Image 1 (tube, one colour):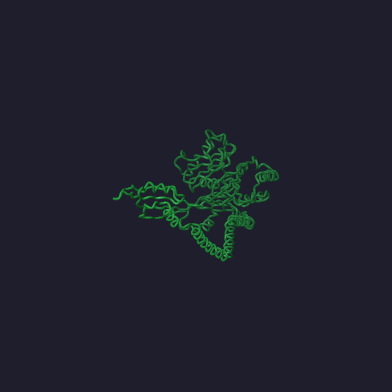
Image 2 (cartoon, rainbow, N blue to C red):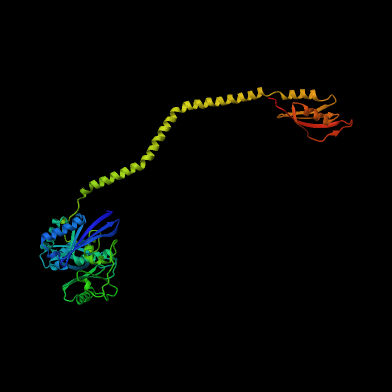
Length: 444
């Protein structure tokens, strides 16, 4: 799923801590943390009312609720088996329970997890976790009463190891110390290996130093100089030269490491690791019914369909509009073609009419021009050539005086702009040879 919420609950010393984590598209975010001091010293009714207030304050719902109990409430063992029996680990581990557990096999809850052997590895490391039924059932029943039924449970050292593998993947050694005024619980995690211990202390600084030294010996690491150190608990502030380790979660603050146990428990509901052990039997684990999600999925499908319809509304309307326009065009196409044909015929008739009008309105200027030449030219003048084009007349001929001919034409009401187009020459009889051009004056 794209959105997940998990609630982690840690019982440590006399206190109980809560952490609410959210995973959005795989990105982890810390929502909130709570602590109930001296929870184990309260009456059952006080416990219920206190937890109910937290549930109402943060509107918590029974989705993924994982519990972490102190290491001394159960047993954690790591075993190594030949890699060839990896597929039969459950049956092999079940045969070892009587040797591993001080309680009868039918009185314990147990689970195991294992690492993924590297290529060429000859053994597989298995982490076995077990707890008496009576111890865990007490907490299962309590959280059912406060409407937070448990989906999973484990012991603190395994929970820490899971959180470290999720938040800081790799083989860098990490030491976790939970410090109470009279007790220290510690674990060393290095990849798929975990070593843990718990011991009463009088001096917190001396007890913490001794716990670290014992863990180094148990885990067989040469030095703790490069190891990561996570310290939290009610007495952690008493330790000298304590430097907080930032928890790599969105919305996490420097003091978030004080809730590391609860955060690691919440991570059990969001991510898997080589320490993903769950002590609650499968059939008793709370799981949200998928039938409850049917209305949500139905609304989601409806929203998607509605969104698609809204997106396709405009193109569909345009398509329908275009189809109606095409239908209207097909319906009126015959009438439009008839009108177009009539328009073509009308244009042809108009052209003929204009040509006829021009022909009727225009006069025979040639005849009128020749008549005017015959009227105004003197008897001694002779025309050799005559041409007419676009109301322009060009003549050439012989006269006693070419300038007299020009003047006579200019005085005529029919001609204007009378000009010589070439030089005037004398012939052998001393007459002028001339060429004149004139424009016919259009009469309205």
